[in-house]
Amino acid sequence: MKYTRITLSLIAVGLLAACSSSPSTEGQSGAAVEDRSSGAASSGVDSSRVVPVDANGASGKSAYPELKDPKSILSKRSVLFDYNSYVIKDEYRSLVEAHAKFLTSHPSVKMLIQGNTDERGSREYNLALGQKRSDAVKKALTLLGVSESQLESVSLGEEKPSCSDASEACWSANRRGDMLYSGEF
Amino acid sequence: MNQRILTFLRGTATACALALASSLAQAQLSIEITGAGTNRMPVAIASFEGEQTLPRAVTDVVRADLERSGLFKMVELGPSPMGADAPPDFGRVRSRGADAFAVGTVAPSGSGRYQVQFRLFDAAKQVSLGSQAMVMAPNQYRTTGHRIADFIYEKLTGEPGVFSTRIAYVLKSGQRYELQIADADGSNAQTALASKEPIISPAWSPDGSRLAYVSFEAKKPVVYVHSLATGQRNVAANFKGSNSAPAWSPDGRRLAVVLTKDGQSQLYSVNADGSGVQRLASSSGIDTEPAWSTDGWIYFTSDRGGSPQIYRVPAGGGDAQRVSFEGTYNVSPRPSPDGKSLVYVSRNGGRFQVTLLDLNSRQTQILTDSAKDESPSFAPNGRMVLYATEVGGRGVLAAVSSDGRVKQRLSVQSGDVREPAWGPQPRN
Image (cartoon, rainbow over all chains, first blue to last red; front, side, top):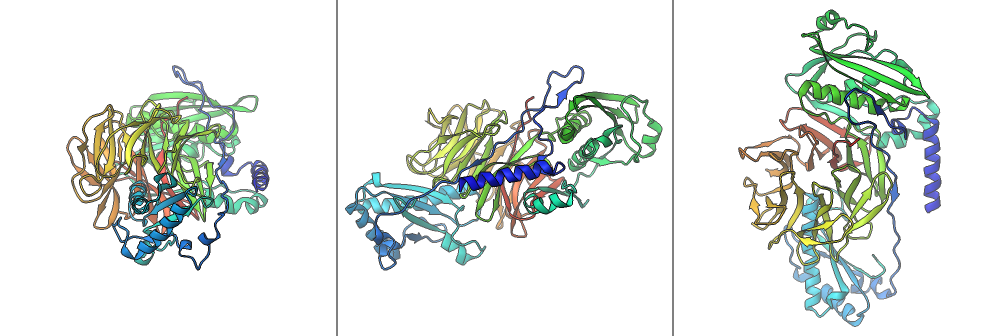
């Protein structure tokens, strides 16, 4: 995978070099522009070079088949929230209880809880609102006896919608907390 | 409205065009001017003697820059070039109506490099306003053009130009996110970071060499500091919980960040290498989106009073003061470089719009007529505000002057552009 990417980059660089007039290589020569005006204290253009970095990591597999079995309640991982609400609704009580039971009986297993919001408004403020949702799930689990050291609550804000239309149905699907187990994150 | 589309895509040889058309067309930001100032100064940039030997004329870049600022109206002088040393034909320039004009000469200076000399004149007073000379490689005509435009802008307006600055933004195409750096005119886009997971909140270090940002590559928000020239990066904040909203201190040593390690989203500061975490403020609600001003404040968003509003605390510690009072949703504050005003996003009847607050007079002005504005940031001269918005369901960048008159839009042919941040003046 990595090699493919490097090879493609090299091909792209080669093509760009061959197309000397292409816009994306313009003005990128390593040599600086010198300033020769009289009285100018400064000279040269700062390095405008940008080195690309690839941030794609890998994730592993879970050792507990019941977490993936569609017949098990443990395969259900999402808690949906009402608009402007950070309270877990009664309909999710049995789901949260099942996960609490699994975690207390598997104390070495860890869970990452990701809070999400709909797309409206500031990304960073939504990130903070999503945190309130993941914190609500975390608090419910700890009240059911799960050790805090097994849990991490984080927010993805509006960045990872499960649905991307600008409609109320979609927005409500995006107001959720997701529970991920060790190996899934 | 003066509608004019300026794209900087150039004609390429057919083979190259076939090979690269899709990727370049997609990646290239093009600028559309959607509003200009009312009293634009007529200025002429004569073609420079000898510039036809360059890949593209330096003066094309200069004219496009000045035109795009919305403060100048370009006056045509015809195709014949005017050299830097010849006595200028003031009569010809005045007859075309230009108040100021520039002439120049491009000549080989050895080793494949070129010297570019130019001079700016006041056409009415018939006096020189200054001159400059630079040496460059032929493919640096764009950098040189921006610097000439900066010189002319400063001589004619009295404030520094921002044509040589860079912008950072996030390009989302499908499930791929790229943190890109481009020249302020959208050209020369380069990818600093590519990821399958979201990237948000890029923030330039005051010297322009590094970006802090939030990346979700670890399935949670983590703050990184990334050196652009080397690609080296380090984790600046990865505490248990969420880590977000980085903002540089004016000396470039510390970052204000938002952490949830002790509960709700709250403000902290850390050294750029991630050490020395300290609490900046505490509240019973959400505190986020810190922004350091040059006059000693940290502005931020807080819902401690029930709805999200702008507050500020002294950077050295102290009590928070509420800054915004109108409406029920005011977020994403960014102070102007001189600390006298603030831009933020306010919700007005369901529309999210960039708003300017004069901190002395307390007057507010909505600067845009769009509905989904996000992430405003000032140009380093305080004259323009860059922000993200949506047009036809797609994310685009837009810029508006701080008086609301000059408007530009930067978009790509496909994909969403968001999370812009205007970089500082280059330090040479």
